[in-house]
Image (cartoon, rainbow, N blue to C red; front, side):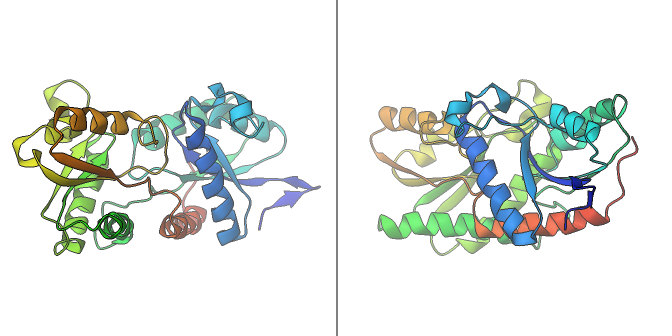
Length: 289
């Protein structure tokens, strides 16, 4: 239960994503926070690290998005002494491991003293036996196969692309798991990035989705593009970057049939994982502020 002193909440649970300029991402985060709150019987506040405060509130049901640093500053000045941060990130992004702690430290230097605990990301690269994310993707791919009566299509798993090898390792692990789960249903599975930074040090993001779609081995037949994204938005939304990449590939090659899965963040298995991360976070040592 939430801690209160004189009817003021002193402990706050935050579900934190990176943020987006697309309202669908913020609305999705709110839905996840509401579902998680019901699961753990604790109020969960959806908040972004960046960007989302620039969205017109009229596109957010007249409720502006909240940003981590100003929110923590406001709450700590009003008596909140403990923050539990549940990352809405698939892997250990620098946004959570580096940027967020720095912003928390900055706030702590100008407000009342508080503690902050930051939980693990949704996927723990050290626990490759956890198949839940792969099973969500299997479910979504299988639905497309069944709905469209496909016979052993090719599958391309796509994430955003990252400057972090540990985050990229998450995709590699899930690819291996998903390939095993779909082995009798598909022809092949390829892992890709939507985009990457320039420089050989980021070559681990290769291949890119657009290059794979234009490659010889994908020159014809049925192809399912499976989204390793938690939320719809500028990248994984209905008219997002990946949809545009797929449409361009289709325009260049009419011999391919492209199907796209949806983002995975609102799946009940994700809610269960986030609930586990909440209880783990409560037991973690606070940051040294």
